[in-house]
Image (tube, rainbow, N blue to C red; front, side, top):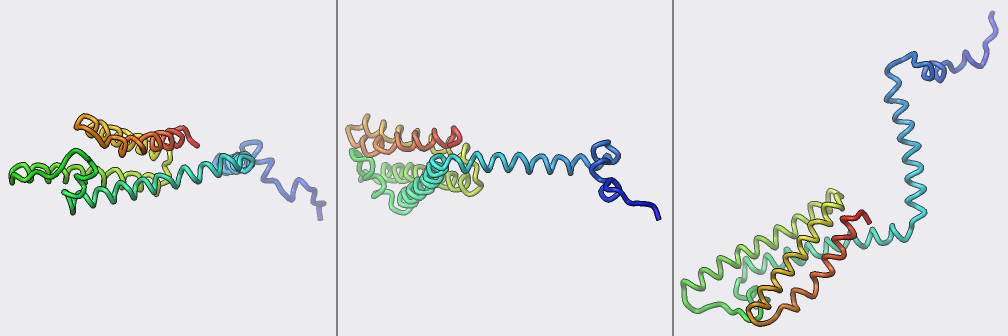
Length: 177
């Protein structure tokens, strides 16, 4: 009986090294990606402050989305009440004017519901850079709403107060924090 050496017990590494089997490339790539994953995990765990900030930043848009959806539903169901968020304006008494304002409030409600749902969708699918850009777009919506109130005579601070918060949170998410 011939003697069995160590090289006979495990010939696979030599075959992989020599390229004896062409189907081994995916296996090698898998091992390489596991090593990269281990390195990334160590790097991520060393930055606990960044991780804590990320959790907060990724939760805030869910609150923003709920607020947008709430305002949108309010505008669809109670247009005259939703109009009170634009202080100088009130619901007109003429039937044709009232119908026009209610139609515009429907557009406003649909816009807000869309903004909230888009935040939820990006958050659900964990696409945080896209979520950041959606939150930045939400700050643009708040700025324009405030500008409309400013041009009409007041109430702009109600809208401009939260626009910078959206901008900061959205920018940090878009940058990858």
